[in-house]
Image (cartoon, rainbow, N blue to C red; front, side, top):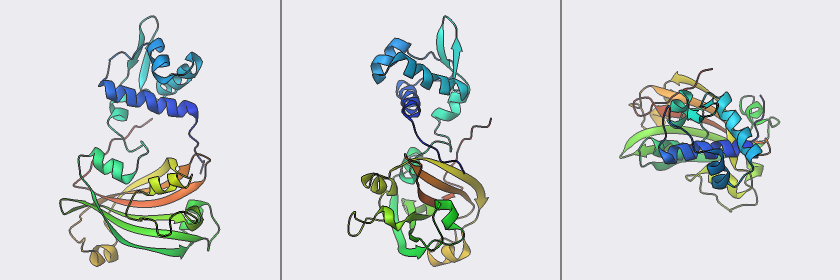
Length: 240
């Protein structure tokens, strides 16, 4: 599996997408001029053009010679927060309009096994922290999550990290904040033992997003299995 790195150009690309959202632009709308974007982002014109080229390659913008750059059909999915956008579970839940409450179901140190070791690119037996959590809103269970991260990443930080809080923020404080991920998606039901143990028999069909998160240097920092309640979420996809 390739290890993605977020370059300055990619961060600028993300900034342009955020600008599009802030300005409320939609399919067919014209982007600000190069001069306006250079001033907004405080970058050189060649750097801006590289980031815009990435958006053009992703079918998010179209270039019309002599007229400018316009939002293409691909922008409709990108601006709608597709599943391909990297964000924490808390951010994703909030983006769907929920005020999430997190319940820590348990955490423990476990040795990396034949399944988790290759996901995190560590030898079998490496100490991992396993965190099990449930996000709910108004008493409705939304996301059942299991996360694994190498114990060494959080050694030397807080004596007892708040495992109910954001793992992204925790790792960022340790200089290993995730910036990108790779994911597989499939429709499942909750593991029967987890459903019985935590009173989630009525959770129903779930969309499982199995994700490996990477720090800026390419280090694999989180392996996550997030079960999203099918009746509570919808996601968009970009197919190429």
